[in-house]
Image 1: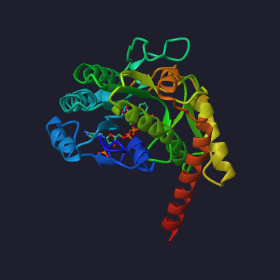
Image 2: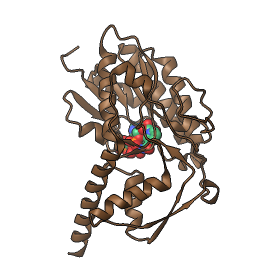
Image 3: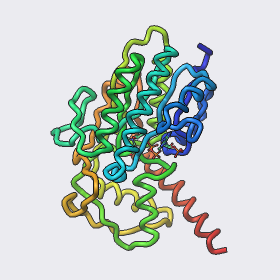
Image 4: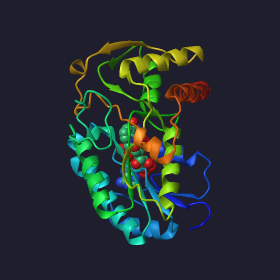
Length: 303
Ligand SMILES: NC(=O)c1ccc[n+]([C@@H]2O[C@H](COP(=O)([O-])OP(=O)(O)OC[C@H]3O[C@@H](n4cnc5c(N)ncnc54)[C@H](OP(=O)(O)O)[C@@H]3O)[C@@H](O)[C@H]2O)c1
């Protein structure tokens, strides 16, 4: 292995892929559609062969939770069958695969944060496709780290924070559920955690393969998080809306979401010596960047 582990990231323009790319870590390469398409598993061998990595991080996924209800075939192809092939290829090369998964493998009925060993019971096609993907990865590649994340936000790509700010540009009031609780997680913190885990897994004596959770540590509900976004935005002269808090029963969506999405990160923190910084710092940074992007766009729109 070279001095700095060469890591191939599958996924290029998504939120996590961008956070990984912007972390300034040497030895990274990226493969995305069409040359590395999880929906076309035959494309993956050439992508891995070309990069010749020491480890692979799979940041690619079918991520439309509601879309998966009506397009389950795509969700299972991208979230289960593609990762299964990726895992076979990594196993054949004897390299670790770090595969990113989700809180949506759980039904949210637990009274307390979910531990990695808790039994999955997905409520949605998306959650089921990710759970089956986890099992396929674990079966095909002994050197696997399955890393579940939740409520991911950042200045990159689409996410809850950007959605709230975009909505406030055209609405005075935004309706947000107040009975779904989670640990918001700043995507660049996940990127740092994944690098640390990948580097550890590249060591010849590493043995702690398995499933981990990587999330922030202070619980909040969605409506309160939206209010925090607008409070930050207001200090910057950015878009602001009133938040109408409603129960999930008043906000029907095609896919059910777990009311409790809290993932306990202790196992990852202890095993890899990680720190997960306060997600509120990430929220401040994300709002600042997105507000300044929006204001630059609205200025250029005007003229
Ligand atoms: N965002 C969250 O709140 C959240 C919560 C829990 C778990 N997760 C998990 O975190 C991981 C990263 O999510 P994210 O937030 O970065 O999602 P995202 O912004 O929607 O990005 C999805 C990524 O998947 C790639 N992708 C989609 N279809 C693909 C295919 N057929 N082949 C290869 N790549 C494909 C996209 O690539 P293109 O550039 O080609 O479009 C993009 O890079 C996923 O495993 C997701 O399930 C996210």
